[in-house]
Length: 238
Ligand code: ADP
Ligand code: MG
Image 1 (cartoon, rainbow, N blue to C red):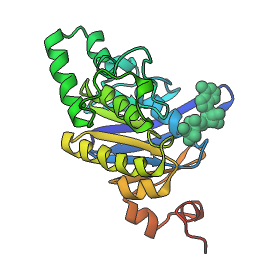
Image 2 (image 1 turned 45 degrees about the vertical axis):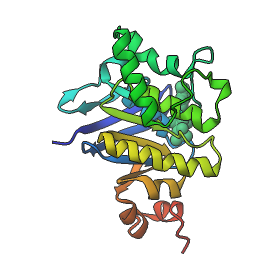
Image 3 (image 1 turned 180 degrees about the vertical axis):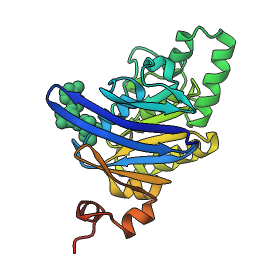
Image 4 (image 1 turned 90 degrees about the vertical axis):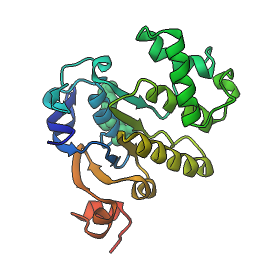
């Protein structure tokens, strides 16, 4: 049985059907990239998995449990957005600790876990800094640490690198992948960047206009595109 299973997911905003009858499975520890052009529904699908945009139809199963009607808190899913969404008036440490405080963890336990993830995302020495004192890459690492500290069973990353410059983006790609492997964390990463998807993913789900048009390894998607859209999007123009 697959770790994540989406059955016939449908999401509408009024008359606008963003996606219909989406189906996929994901294995435990897999790194999946949701790739597709702007507006095809990637963020909406991710937010539906997180419980931020409840679906109109279909079911989401995680580890044998139907989570379709659970609140975002109940799902145990961590999410990082393109814009960091940090608390500007809190230090790095306090930003990361926030989720554990909400869960009413004790101070000593919070300190231990926060120190662990700060080391993991390479922010040691920045504990007392405020977001405005950090670079874009550092802020995004705080956002990642904040998602990781609660030990999510799934990590969702919505274009977390898009706002960063090329050099930092390449470094962070590798860092995200290393951490994900080390934690054996089931991850869905959203991007519209083909190269990023090719380099990072175990499998790519290629989306167009609310449909997953092809799911497969980077190599399979590139060498055996299922249709002209996939071929064109992956850079074959023949
Ligand atoms: P992507 O992340 O692939 O760029 P989105 O999921 O953001 O695409 O958007 C897909 C479609 O859903 C767009 O047509 C967009 O206008 C619509 N949409 C997204 N969020 C909302 C919302 N909160 N209310 C109404 N329409 C929305
Ligand atoms: Mg988006």
